[in-house]
Length: 142
Length: 486
Image 1: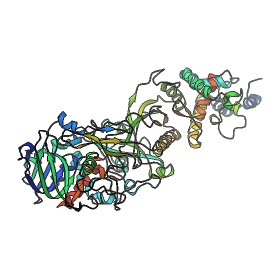
Image 2 (image 1 turned 90 degrees about the vertical axis):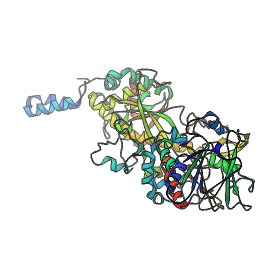
Image 3 (image 1 turned 135 degrees about the horizontal axis):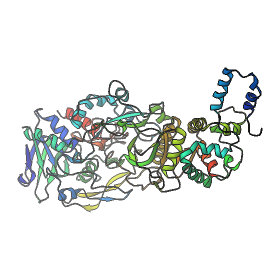
Image 4 (image 1 turned 30 degrees about the vertical axis):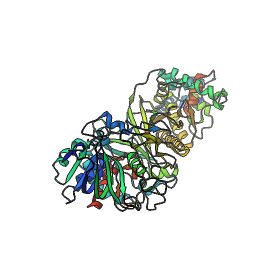
């Protein structure tokens, strides 16, 4: 059962009682989730899809200036801005979210970064911390 | 009518009610306004109807501060620098006149309302377009289909009109046909004569490149020679005052300013920028992005505008030197914002802090007429650089906050005191306006302190400059001077 999320377990356990309506709810929930058992790197990579190499270059450039970035230095932490505030298990949310959901949340986090001054200056670019941390994840070994 | 200075009898005296030295935007405006006033007006233009290298060479000087284009930034023939100006027209804003307390030395002794009666006529003369308000809201409303890139509590828009009217061509026939206006071409003013006290101008000494010369006596005098040569003529007129006319407080030539204009950044936007920011079908209008006054106060900014340039074509790699090519950032932004981002250059236009150390002086040289040549010493202050950086950071943060895009401050733009192209060819401030003779050369009516019949026309009277191009305000002030001369 490893890698199956707790919410999915609940749905499976209640399978005998599933009605058509509940099935529909399950489908909706499923659409908000990515594939289970992904690494955070795979999850981040899915966001960048056709621009993965771009993201790796940016991430490597960031890590060359900030090798001690707490997200990149950890093998479990995820960019706080890429996860909805108040999320109990950020890694689980991050690795479960479908790419579009993760991208949308990350974009929101980037905007918040500009408000809060979490701006990384990299080769003249003024970039949101969330974005460069995502890039750092895909460029790293985690 | 037009007359050749060479045709005037050597050492003779030409009499006039009003004499205007210089036939650029300011001089032509005043001469045109005085037609039919009953005043006999003489205009003295050093050049002819066309560019002439020998005349232009009289602008030669030295540069001792930051690199500066002294000769090519102005033109010395009928119409003056309007012969090559870009035609960007915009009035100064209320805050430019009121001053920004956090930018030392800014503010005028007059307010925007003092020039409002003149801005409409000045606009029509300067642009030859129908009048239209410059207020940003008026452009967003109605059927103009103007879309704002950003309109937030921190950043808004500012509209320029763009219509490069060549004054020398547009108004040549009117002055030719004016029976009470005489325009002398090839008439270089080399000295302002005064009475023994230096408090009353009596005449102008004129020289030609062929060695002839004459004198013009008048009741009222106007210097309209441009932001550099207005100061030069005052400094060189030292028969009574060793330091030059109007210079008892050592202010003539100081506070030389030019707009800080440079393409200093690259923008990556999630969507194409609205056409009005690029010109496009709005070919007579172009919008810039400006900090709101609240943002300017909060971030302690000078008058600043951001002009978005033509789209840049991004390569996959190496479009910019450095480790983070713009295509990389473009790909990342596009992934997060789910779009196909667009890349543009970004130009900043900002007012410098009025700085007494930035100045025009006479150097040891002389030109072909024997007149002292100038040294231009333009320096930006640390405060200027800090304000530029804060402005750029504000722009980047606000665009990022709104999800519009990201920005790169190009390395060769900010922070380099000797940076390239850090000017807009707008010569200002060298005979600054103040009610107090100890802090300014001219009074609020543009008349030289201590000299009852000598006016200065042009942007040399600007005590601070905002971000708007100066020509419209030059013309508005010239119309106001013409009212006083009548």
